[in-house]
Structure formats: structure tokens, C-alpha cells
Length: 366
View 1 (cartoon, rainbow, N blue to C red):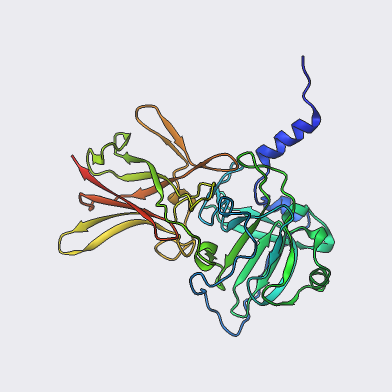
View 2 (cartoon, rainbow, N blue to C red):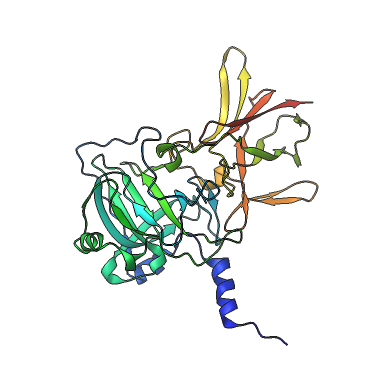
């Protein structure tokens, strides 16, 4: 019998279990010295948004093939609890620099998240640098004069510039746009057979809403529309794949499997908009769907329950199964569109990305 080396076992376990963000139960977080984050919202203004594409990216991307690794609305599931990625993974060279995209007040902490298993909504917990922690899960945060919050995760706490380290020890201080805030921690897990050194970048409004960094940062060159891989119809008595753009009847739900490739980028991402529309005689067209181009909100302006947005598991009547996955090796996104009984044929599906590229499919009832 051959014995597997302990080093290989450690690598294998890490590869399977290490999420891009640290998630604990509330009890585990408190036991490790973390406390629920409290954010002061005192400010001269409370503007929620920036102008589109007005911020510089805080890192220098490796190249056009290695830019955004995971995106804000992306479904993640490294354990039993699914959650939104909530920010953008910015791919950079090993130990690459993080630069302030704007002026602001910085702080630095170790952090973790406690995830609501029912909705996928996160509660952040932090502890000061002096308390110690996992160096992979240290962040530099920046609050602007408009009370916007920029978070840079996976900054190496052992390699902070001297001036930044002193500000962090004092509980924070002001920095200017272009100032070096730190360097990326060396990430221990590869993706697609390559290094995956990255900064997880969150952009949060004064009201605590996650904003899409791709919309508010400098635009990418991207002329490729998202790809619709499959469309599934859920009827009261069966679940089937839609072929030749034909529906058997009005479904109770459409499930759309789609991905977006951003230009030359090698990482598949979820599209930012997935919606179904239909015409109603004598009134405006009606629609259902999800638009995360700018913010992680549903059509009512509320946090979108992840179970309503994504179909985690789908088993068709012919026995085939599909699962939404978002991890180091799997990126499959099944978007749910609940169709009301008042909908009419044809139903137009639109899937688009943050650059305005779109794919449209019109479904007719036989």
C-alpha cells in the first residue's frame, strides 16, 4: 500500500476547502476574538453612487487574460452555505501593489464573515492587527469624504509600508489617491493551473449596499456578449430543457444557464443582467429578472435572497441534473426567472454584461 505524503494531503485539503473569503459561525468568530463590525456613517454627504467608470483600479492587472477572477454577483459555495462574492477578485502579479484609487481615511483589520444560511447575506466581523490572525484574511479599508467604503482584502499584513502600518496601529489616518497601501498576500491555491494571487475589492455605499466595482471603475475593452448555455422550463408536471426556442406551454419558471467572458479574460463570470419580458395588451411590457450591473439589489431595492436568484440544484424530468457552482474549478450559474400566470407569449430573454453586450432569445409557445 502506498502512503500519500503529508504535504500533498495538506495541499489537497487546502485546495478543496480554502474559500476566497474566511467564513465562520458567529460562535467561532467571537471565540477567535472577532467582533461585529460597526461602521460610522457620519459624513458631510451621504451620496450612494459614484459616476460610472470614474475610479481607477487599485491594482495593475497581470494582462487582459487575467483581470477579474470572480465578480460581485457571483454565486460562491465552498461549504454548505452559498453566498454572493460581493466584490471583484483583481488578478495581479505575486506580491503586487495595492494603490488608493481616491483620497480617504484608511484602517486595517483582520476580518471574517458570518453568513445567513437562508439568504446568503453576510455580517462582517473584525479584529485589530495587534490581535493577530490569518495573514490571508487581512484588509485595508478606505472611507471617502462621501462616506463610500472601499475594502481591499488579502493585503499582506507583514509587508505594509511603514507609514501605512503606523496609521493602522493608530486606528487609521488619511491617505491620498495613488498612495501605495500594501501588497497582495501570496495565495496558496491555484486556479485553472495557474497562480491566483488577487485582491478582493469591495465597494460599498453609505447605506451598506454592495456596488459593482466593474461599473464604477475604468471600463474594460469587451465586445463579447454573454453565452446562454441552456434554457430550462419548469412546468407544473415536469422540468425540461427548452429546444429550438419553443415552449410546450406557459412555464411557472424559466431557468437560464449563462456565463460571461470579459474580452480576453480567461475566467467565466455570471452575466450582470438576466431578465424575461412579455407584452400585455393595452399596457406597458412586463418583466421579471435580476439587474446587478450597478448594485447588489433586487427590483424592490432590497438585498436579493440568493435562493431566489440562483437555482442551486435542478433535476430534469429526463433524469439529468444541473447544479450552480462557483469555486476554483467550477463556474456554472443557473438564474431563476419566475413567470406569473398572466404572462403571454412570446417571452423575450435578455442576458447582458456590464459592458452593454447582450444576448437575446425569443421563446414562443408551440
